[in-house]
Image (cartoon, rainbow, N blue to C red; front, side, top):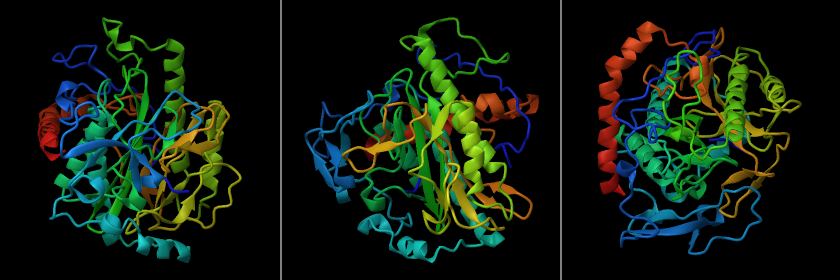
Length: 441
């Protein structure tokens, strides 16, 4: 979640991953990952058209402090519009229930991270000892599992609301707290940003459509530490057109998606991912935080894209957001240099085209591109080590092999065998979560 080794698998080379379609799924239903449940499986019991006594559907307003029946007025630039969000009538602030056994973040009831606000004033980055880094790693592993779970479920017809329920249940089932929930009154457990939304999108009831791009931003609070990461994926075919990719026999996958629009979306996703990779490549002791912006901007310019200047990466650990600030654009004046034990995020927000400026929707959270163009982002939590970087939210062998990761991750034969062996475990875990989420809504 943004504030105002080079590759995850530890390899420095580029590679192609093989990609196959599960025979139990029709090509028209295959989107981000073949292990995902069907759209029907992810339907909510309560919808705006079919409200229940327990769940009402309203528009978010006033930075999460208010709800309204009517869509707020705004001079919309892109095609996207806000949709209603669920409001749990019997629960505090209408939010999803968090089990009593979960240790909650400071802002669970007050919405104010007071300790974090005091820490920001110090402008000093903590140098975490290894014992604390391992605690932070546990939170990051939970965050990684949550985002992988959500990405597997992305497909046309699924709503961000349903994805938020999956994320919420996954994190809570791990006895962790979803950090965004009630953070300055943010009403949901993760941020889901679609198409022209740059960041902080509020999960709502608009079904995802073929050709959308969607960013999932997850943070888990566990053992006193926050682990933050995000990824953007294309809603449609995987986009992996390499030699090892299986070619579909039907055109249904791309039905309704203009080829030029699809290519532009893929270009943006590759650009955003390479921006993160290049920014991470210089993480080591004594590197100035401001230098990350130079690396990111060089990649963005190569793709004729722009870097958002309003939001930046941040320090993380015991606090959700803290010093240092990590801007992603060239010429920034960020203070400080990296030292071993510094924990922070890099999360460049990249817009298609040269317009980097943003606007804020009336809900007070959703940041969108000023010209309505697409925006994409990838994020990791990492720690500076004595000789480089330790990426705590790195992808693993069970992470969904979707575009753009299929372009950069080298999965050899051994990895393919391991992935096959773990498939049943992954499916069982996901299905258990989905079976629970209707009863918890």
